[in-house]
Image (cartoon, rainbow, N blue to C red):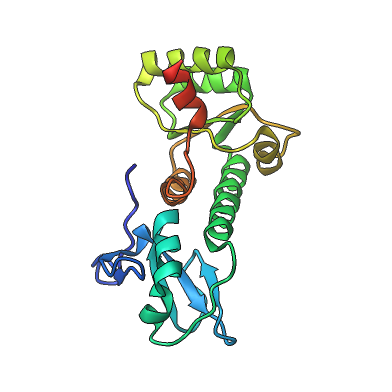
Length: 212
């Protein structure tokens, strides 16, 4: 998945050192953890909280490695407190951010939700993303897969959210099928999904469909 690179005022890509591996990477490949006044780490996905912080690669394995080896304290050059379930906490925050962006896209008129609306949107133009709920039936998913593939080829699919969660974000009781049009929300959504892919399979239904 293509990342949207973060740059400083001179256009240079900002880089940080991963607390788990020691590698220097672009910020958009990492997660910042701010050091609170009490010495505990606080996830800072937007990298805007004040004070010192440490960075870690945006995946579950790196976070667990940094916890196990003391990488966070070593990177901070002081003892820091690591909350229990840090990887799960970050995963949940990434999910919230992704769903929030879908809500913003809906208010901007960039979301087509529901099977019929998604079908019409796919016929009208190539979307940035397709959205398929975890509960999407094989029949409905297959029809939209074939339509999209015939018209546009590969389009990324976000299939790791429940219909209820999607509905709450988009302003309906539940959403099973949707499309996200190209634009600033789609670019931001891609960046969040890229990070979220380090914590969960982004389209488990697609994998099951392919294996079937």
